[in-house]
Length: 288
Ligand code: G1P
Image (cartoon, rainbow, N blue to C red; front, side, top):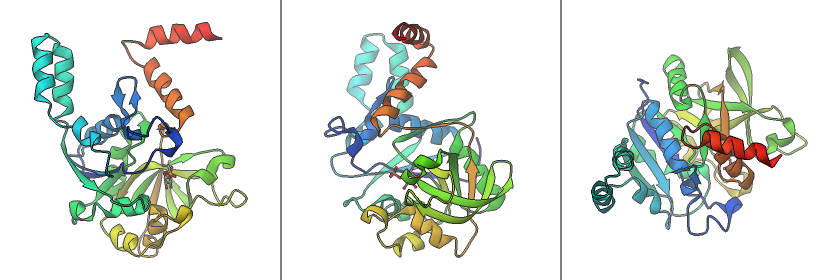
């Protein structure tokens, strides 16, 4: 996809508390789905969406994320010697996907604070945000679709999904007016509303396109839910100055940072793989 949004920020500094002890020494973004870490799926979506420059926000101890995308001459030489051509190609492709840089978030002060660490990288350009623990399966790369929305509206746009009202309190909730096929103009945003006061079943699903003016609002956002600086609160503040849109996407969101979804994602994506899909399906049928 060709579009005006070339930069992306991937927050990946958080502690994977819902997947402990699995994520004690290994970042949740490095958990493997079939044979690739989650973050690789996220970066592949960004690249397919036309993104050329990525900033990954990490915290101390998560340097393995950097290693995964760095050239490894020893491994390349070994694969060459052993004649493992397909694997070698995969590894070379992986380290040349696009320009990937890293920045530290030194204190865990929330998603909004993590995005703030990208201010210098973003400069004056529009940019995408892709949560590093979330894989999106959709007919077209979702970030690219949001970038197209941005080109039409010149406004920030967020990906939305519809969930059962009973679980909407786990998310950032979007209230808006429907203005097109799967397209909404925001009227109110609430991060993790109380269970008995859910204003809508449209929720944020880990993909956003912003303009750099979000940073001014992030800087003046006080800690909110869970005592963290919430991106949703900064977006609500931004809405006092400009329109913000929501795109109800066609597809599935896999939040790999929790046990059940982690297993479901492995099975769902495993079933779609040419190399193991059929055998996996046959085996699953023997379980019932
Ligand atoms: C974050 C966001 C929330 C969003 C969710 C899923 O919450 O703050 O608005 O709905 O991701 O993308 P978290 O899951 O980190 O608590």
